Amino acid sequence: MGVYVETNFVLELALLQEQQESCQQLLNLAESGRINLILPAFSLTEPYETLIRREKIRGKLSHNLRDELNQLGRSLPYQEEVNTFQEITQFLVNSAKEEQQRFQMVVDKLLTVS
Image (tube, rainbow, N blue to C red; front, side):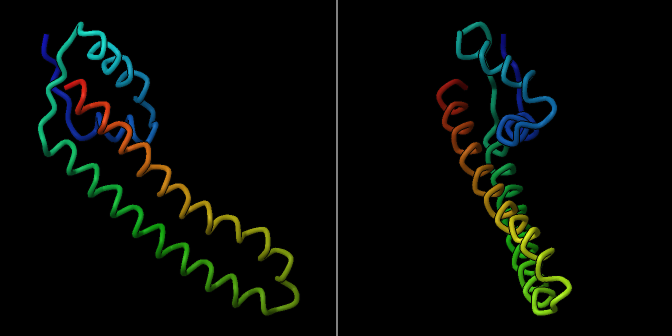
């Protein structure tokens, strides 16, 4: 039996979103040969573009937040609080990198299975 999957299927797996368990079950069925996944090419390019766009947004947000925190950190009353928020900027950057890595692993698996 052929199962047609698209962009959201790929994003669910790569971003570990709410429906990723169901998607993983379908992927497992395809790996075992019980179903055939049908994956149109645009289902790989659209998620890639989505992740690139998110990475740019997070990078810009991280940069702007870091700049603002640096300005606030110059004021004595805010110095301690600013240090606690510095981790957020790194989290934004790291999350985008992790999503790209997971996306690549999902693509590799899908290209093998579908």
